[in-house]
Amino acid sequence: MSEADLRELSDRELMAAHVAGDSQAFSELVSRHRDRLWSVSLRTTGDPEEASDALQDALISAFRRADQYRGEAAVTTWLHRIVVNAGLDRLRRRAVRPTTTLPDHNENSGLELVEPRDAIAERENWIEISAALAELPQDQREAIILVDVQGYSVEAAAKELNCPTGTIKSRCSRGRAKLAESLGHLRNQDVGEIVTTTDQSNPRKEE
Image (tube, rainbow, N blue to C red; front, top):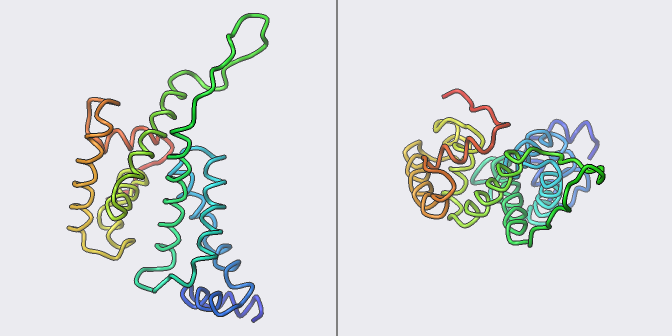
């Protein structure tokens, strides 16, 4: 199939073509949505390097698992879930790695901290939050990521996940309650605030 023909296909048709053996269909799908998937990965990990690696992991996984797509949700929703899970998996592994002690700083060392201490602490918090998110049931994790991390309105999240708004509210409520148990030591505030204020780069979408 020519590139021009592929560009005329819907996302679902591209997935079907890929599963059927078309060697260019998946590349067209990725090209179509790469910017959005990169944004999802960056907002999930909070770190460009981790985001790049997570996105690569996710696309490899999606390429290999395309035959598992059943069409119950939009292709972008299916890809979105894989990218989020890949990002959380990387952060969960990073959270359990031993930390490296920085060398002592003195006038003659020529070393300077790249980030202020508050930024480092904020990133450490986000790693811990992401590890806790990874432990939630998938439906609760997806709702929390969309609403509290990426700033979707409840209505937009419901559309993205193809379920009623009441379901999103319920999943967020249950997920936040579980996160409060594991993250309550970070800050004495609502879990939703912990998540959203840690991801300072993400402006919330309008309701």
